[in-house]
Length: 238
Image (tube, rainbow, N blue to C red; front, side, top):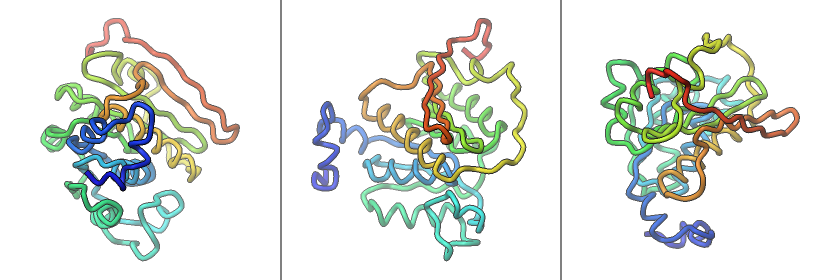
């Protein structure tokens, strides 16, 4: 272990060498290396998560640069996944990166999710989230959900062995695909950082997770709210 690299983590109350070793022995899968995925990936790599999978099939567009901090102007038109691995490898060369340079779909989801300890949802559409829910539920994987709309963001975590599932929270609600809207750039940094924190706590076995709690942030007021939710009666997925 590079104790100098992780010295500020090792100084934390409750964070011991065993905690750091758990991270080093863990594998996290990040689905989407865009706005949310950028801070998630940076903080997972910086924290010392030993193996990080990246699912990303897009190339860098100029409009991404307002919020997707993994990329620079010189990266425009380059594959996001390739750039991510280069940048994160420079940050922490101890990490083993596994790149999946395509989009998650029903044909590849199970194979991709297999072998990872936690999945972080950095997608931007309901179709992908439904697929993540079904795949992680079947595979018995924990997954961290995050979403952004304009000035607002939300985070929660779903576990295979306790607490309500994604369908308990969303199915039966107005779950249409959202229209394309603007994004407050700093919001993805805040929400992505919280997602990374939930994944790190889960892998390191520290703290209290957002199980059954949806954390919501309003960037315009700076206010955080928590909405509790429980297993939905008759949920076919629980």
